[in-house]
Length: 145
Image (cartoon, rainbow, N blue to C red):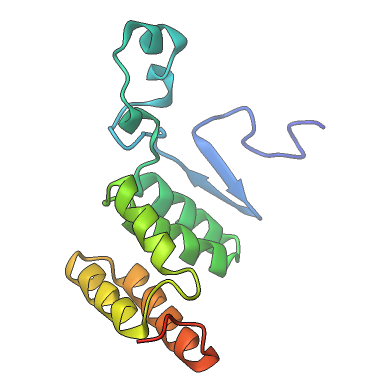
């Protein structure tokens, strides 16, 4: 395919979604490193940490903006929730995921989780958990109280 098929393909500072072209800042990891710093040499030297391979909330929010501009509203909302979750350690994200599986938490436990997330300035994730609590209660798939 020619570069005409994918405008901006040869310019890593450009992002094309649909017909709109957005200028992007350089991609940064959760630790603030640029992608150019993630090398085999740095890995072998022991200068990289797991945080260096984690996506940043800012990067996810930028992807969400591009998705929204391209008309992908649901994808954009998923990316915004993911951006909020980057503030948590991976272990906590896995705990939340486990709680959201049917039959793993009561509706009261899910409501308490949503309140905790709201206090931690994660309103989108909190709303998602509240929506799950309500749906699980209606469908009878929450853990019995």
